Image (cartoon, rainbow, N blue to C red; front, side, top):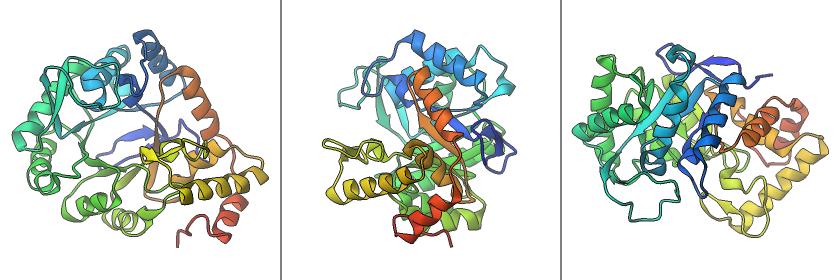
Length: 323
């Protein structure tokens, strides 16, 4: 059984990360404010629990997530953790005009930019906000409506940076399995973060994305495992993919929970551990904002899940078999 602090190879560059990583989107005040004191305590506790992988992005809080995470990471040796951030948006001085969902905003406005120059500028600005001299992994972030430019301009810029030794690994970060598939097929990325597409409620990643990742030796990060929370609370007002959950998803979530409960394990444990059933999924990334949330996820990640549970979910058609 995998434990949250187990170290696993991620990508082709010899990077090793903990099986459970800390996603720093909430540290930018996603949906509700987080204090600097809470952020410092969270990062300190993560290290004490053996978590060695941290993920952030310029978009999160218009830079505040990177800035806050960097403050905590600079307190420990650089060799004790692996860090990923993202490119595809640059931050320009000014007020964020659209509702991004973040409330702890730094005074910048995110602007899409997948040009070669934009990628370099984004990377250099991230280093400044983090106060660090290196980032291990850069994901091309949300290229949904800029796909050709992301593949033809952003990726070659990152490939050059990888050759120069500025970064160790290149990835794509998206919520769309088809985009992950295209990057795996058309580029030489090392890793892929495709959130919400291989979970208890949505296994579309099995169609093409995960088989292609396996064929090309691309490591996958499991993320969005609770599908915006509907798995944990499939009631009125539940969200799925950041929108109101459709009736069929609510029904499926309730059926999945009923099966899980007959086995005496927590829904969170099964949700967190499910993606790791696929051999290409190396680690699980969860966003947390407090020490309590982190400790809850760690306990769930380490909770034993009987093999019979997976077999029953397959037998009743609630999850797809791997083969």
